[in-house]
Image 1 (cartoon, protein in one colour):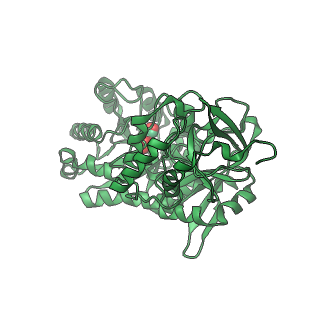
Image 2 (tube, rainbow, N blue to C red):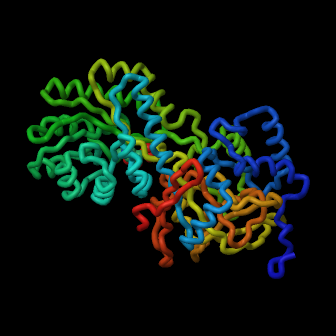
Image 3 (cartoon, rainbow, N blue to C red):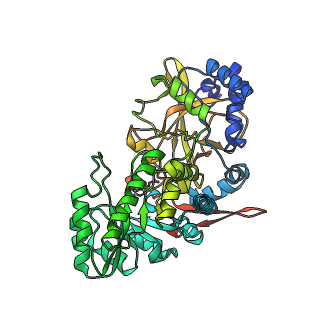
Length: 491
Ligand SMILES: Cc1ncc(COP(=O)(O)O)c(C=O)c1O
């Protein structure tokens, strides 16, 4: 019995559930691999069926994140996360630059296997960490930037100017000038932007961003504008080619739009332009959770699971052909690879999220634990340090679904738990849904949100309440230990 807070056992899922839910809870901290134990073996299906029957109706099903071997090593280390937390004294993000490098090489291997001249630009908007860009530079990738700040940060980490792709609408004069000076590629989004670049009088390499047929996007040039732009380009500006970026994650749409860009290149060549590159932007999916978890979530989704109003929409957290596999599908569709080879065209891609898959986590410290009831059922509300601005999905009327891992592991019973942050805003919740944490959380525990490097950790952060921004820590796995350093953004 706790002195102040009633019976700590009161929020636990009853003892019948312990054995069943305990399997799921252990698979979070026990090493669900990519193709891992949760991918549909019959006994697991049966276990999940039993779990669903016994889980209280006010608690969401477990959604363990896919955890890489290195991430598991970090979670299993009895000291590492605790020591970092003690030194930092607040929430922090960890990044694994070695994983970024693996992800870059995965895309490069697909290009190589398909015999395609391809180049990877990291969509820098997805994460601000310096160690990510450094890993890209070292792995032979460039960076896609959309502001002077991003361009300067990329150059500072060793990305060569020639390996920078500048995207984004209505770029500032300063950005155009700096990009031209450094010999980067500039994706032109509008005629007036092109005019401003021409007026600088500097040599520059440009791609023309195409508004796909039938699209109502605010980005890109329509067919009439494209013709005028091509006509307006002459020495010292070089027309390197054409680009697009699509929302969503459809491989076929990208392959077909890429084929249309090849046609644009050929027409431009007929008018004397070099036009040997197309960029198909980003939008390579990430596979956060196993297929059956995602199906269970979608098929049994209930308003009762949520502490407050349920989200309107969800990112597709299970993605069957993620990252490099999706690139393979794009290249295979209607033999896009052959079309590129035949016409001597280089294919650029600008993945953001996919290069950060399993490359970072966000770590918060539990500062408070309260018990509440929903429909007569008890559950815990945690308050962690930091804010949900470090988990961007929460700010798009959505929910980040991979379950947080309670650290350190320890004995206990599955406990429905939602997670609030430390501000005065009612809506400031890192997890609105009640998650079956494997035990009751205590003040001082850490809550590790896995796989947050892609857009989650720092897209929306602000020093609200004058709370410090969570610093970034780079983890360096070595044979005998995992070393950690402060990221250059935190020094
Ligand atoms: C032009 C452009 N390229 C690349 C990206 C990166 O997309 P993703 O992180 O989905 O790969 C974006 C994202 O908005 C973009 O606008």
